[in-house]
Image (cartoon, rainbow, N blue to C red):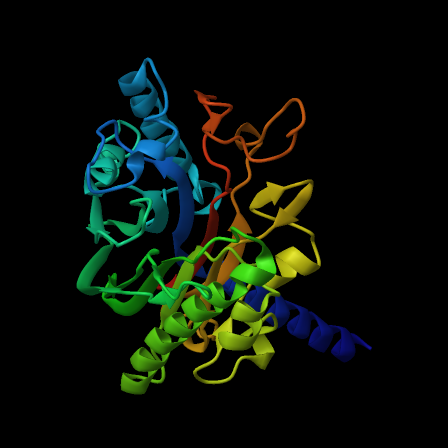
Length: 352
């Protein structure tokens, strides 16, 4: 009996050492995010854009003050995304609904972000409203190597005239020395109804899939993140059929795509934007299989989330619980955006 107790003691001690060793594992963690900034326009009427219909240019007074407050509000949100775990604002963040590079310069130079030393990747797109997508990155963590803008050519079914919309932005670079590819999207809206506008988003998804396929033809193990305001939910055809995105990690094959936001939408009922008392999860971050492997010797996906802090929600009235947008009824609300940001954490095991 004494011998048995001795061996049980050794077994317990061995298990304790393994658990202790596991508990001592250390990980480096970075936040990657996307945020629709809802009409981040400047105060200057650009004669070659339809920006005079932007909420800020429709205002009659205090335009400059409102603009600076809008920028500061956006900076506040960005400065806080992911900090609960990473203790840092996003090292990479895609943004949409920005008018030009100058509004991005004003954003990254806001007092809440200037210390992060964000770089900017931006191209002017042919969008009729003059809004673009862009990528911001912390220069000491991410180093862009290549960037390109891919044009989405879609046409009106009746007139066959081209519909000018946002380009899709590809940025390839090194995240602390590891090659990663980021695609930033803002797919065509649901104006005219979901069914009627659906082919436009299917076309956007096809362009996105072509970009991903091209990267994978060079390297099947490429780490690719595609993010944005897709104007479709994770369950819509553009995402499920064209991108063939999977909700279950185990179902993702080589060259496949994983969408962590499908379960958040279907099982938890979460969303990023609301309309007529229904939530949609249009803002998503998807990734290829090499980012979801269980080997953490390089950066891998850890967790996805929606940044829906209490201060970002409307507290009163008809739109109680909705995202607290910046502009409503022709005026500035001192709010933020009609979309919540989304984010993922990338982690990498580091030596003691």
